[in-house]
Length: 239
Image (cartoon, rainbow, N blue to C red; front, side, top):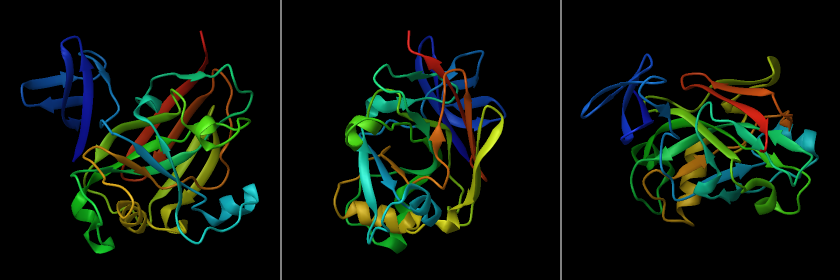
């Protein structure tokens, strides 16, 4: 099942997404006619794991972490599917990174790895936008518009062994499989739950495969994960 949220003139609605239509409790809504997609959840935080693919470590000359290496984006970083990504005035090096992300389905703490499937509502896609020339991860990664998320939550998915690719301006930039993660999705969720109380709607992103890279205004970024879908956003000059 795919779960989505839509912004209508009367306010947000949510329900099952089927072929461009959202089936909500109070009726059906057509995406693009009755409203636009919203980020598929309302997180209190987005927990993002870095350095989680060996090829990315080699490319970026990072050391291999002994445990998941993470940072946090705030809810203000969220953008929906097909919303434009404003190119910040404070950077000359904006980058994309296509990541699989889990959405937490219930408040939880200290979750055992084998119990993670029971607390995850489903999976979606995140673009970890990064102002690479800024100092420190918060300045680089936690600004407004740095977390495009969507287009929906896929509830019936095994996150292991999923093919992915990222296209920028129609050119293939990333191609990998989630089996190449150093720390698997269930391991990451369990690890973070030892440190944080995870709340309904919180997002946990599992890191980017090799070849995250620069993106320019007017370029469209499409991130596809098998079994989930495609997250699409276009970078625009900030007005």
